[in-house]
Length: 241
Image (cartoon, rainbow, N blue to C red):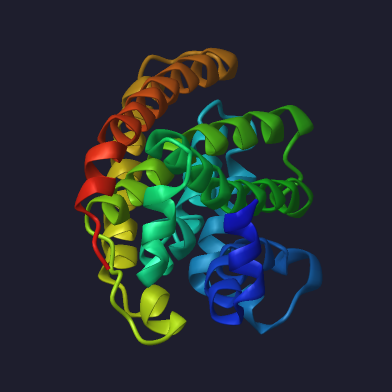
């Protein structure tokens, strides 16, 4: 709750963290409103891919991957400790265990990505006439895929936060951790994509594809969250503004 208040009350944080993840719904709503961007070749390729794949089991995997890719642009979670700056001593001294604190910060950053993915999936449902059942599966897969991606983004900032800065803009816009988190997120998403591609070769039904991919993402999610929690105390001890 405190993390979300900080994001909303600081304009530069809100602009970079909240607005960016809602670009995806805007792009996918273009087929409904028309306009010049609607004729962009890359967007047209995306539209055709989704519309032509409605009857194929792999459709939910493709859409989930595309939406998750958009959600990589979320610097809030990759700069969560850096934004504390000289106030990091407060986190180190309050009567809350570090592993609990990191989970709270994770939930704040993850909620932004989740809301962005949720609205993007809903817009995609209307834009490309995707069935309600497929949309639900897409939302679940995106939600699971974003857990390890966001957890590892937080982990990067936990290990090496940028605590020395003169204004809030430096903490979020001039922070290499945000770039590193996006790159790592892309690597993780690529791994998920390869796994999903291999699963589609089994010629399974859409429900089986969904179940297997969900189980795999749950394993990644649990492992990433455990990694963050187990390293929280040591990382806190090393932090110095």
